[in-house]
Amino acid sequence: MTDLSVRLGRSLSAYALALGLALAPSFARADEAVEPASVVTAVPASTPLTLAYEGSSEAYPNGTFAEQLSSASHGGGGPVGGSPHRTGPGRRDNWKVGPQWRATVDGVLLFRDGANLDAMLNEVGPIAPSVALPPLEFRDNFDHAAGVRALLTSEFPQCAGYELQVGYVGVEKWLANAYFERETIPAASIPTSDVDVLQRRSLNYESNLHAVEINFQRATRGYLKPFAGLRYLGLDETVTDDNVQFTTGVLPNPVNVGDTIASSTTQTTSAVDIQNNLIGFQAGVRLDMWRPTRKLHFNGFFSAGAYCNLVDRDRIFQDSNTVTTNQLVEVSDGNGGTVEQVNTTVSTATTRSTISGDGARVAFVTEAALAGTWKLNNCTALRAGYQVMFLSGVELAEDLWIAPPPVEAIDDDLFLHGWFAGLEYRR
Image 1: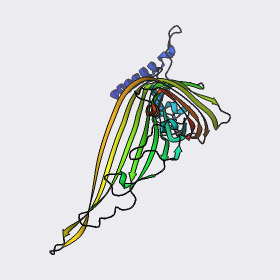
Image 2: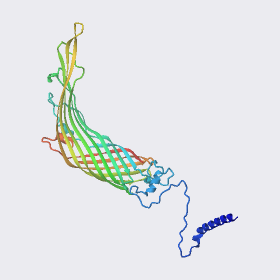
Image 3: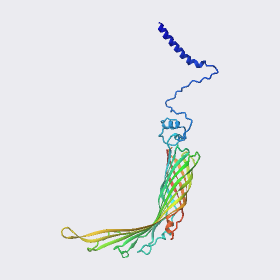
Image 4: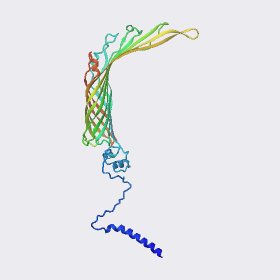
């Protein structure tokens, strides 16, 4: 009985001590500060947990690191970022850690100033054995050429307020040409030929343009977005004067053993090739000018730049002569007799000479465009517009072709303009 009383007393003492400690704050004096009790709030399981970091991150400037990390990793029910794989533009995309892309691809149709074909044809003279040029059969000057323009724009979270742009434009084969009527060169005028030869003379002028640019664009909330960057433009031009001889039909066989019949054709080429390589800086502005409806808006850009034009000039002369010979010979038939056989041989000799000269000069390029965009959905839109481009300080092949000796480099201007249409996609 005594042991039971002792154990019961000890238990009551421990309980009283614990109760006294729990009620101690309520008996504090009025002049003593009392810390408030902690409050625990239940958080629904569907709400993402974020750390209450007040500082912002330079790598994620649109919000705190915890908010960015939470929204990027959370599922479709996230309060800010939504699904990390969701496409389409919008303010909520700014919380994702990846870049946003905007791509435009256009087909372009650019018109070019016509070449001085009359002056170029005056430099074309007859080639022996001809003593005069035949009449012109066909001529066509520069008109338009088709190409492509692509522009990729990306907004990186690491570069707050700026967009990176990479652009390309390429136009292949502006063509200007003139063809002379076909003429016949008698065999008597060609020492190495036993048959008549036909001859065709032509003058061809070809021009190509390719450009690549990298720009940084200011992502402002207004309708003006200034940009600046690097650009390379390549303008390649070639003038070719071709005189081609050919035969029609099959070369006949000799009648008597040991005899030969030959045909001789010659292709003579005189060409001028100029490559303008413009490397420099440009600056400009893109603008959204008018939005009459929710789906239709108009935009455009203007740019100007200064370049160093590294010019490669080549003057090429080439002659290629082909002689085809049929010879009638006797060969053994394997039975002690002989049979007649025609042996055909073809030989070609080519001579080529190239005179090269390089140079450098200052060039300027100005470009502008106006486009209308029709929005199909949040990601895709159709676009069409008109653009102009002016190049100053370039060398053209026609100037080198018609320049009298001694030939000197001539600065010239080139004006291009035309339509474009394509597709715009945003992610």
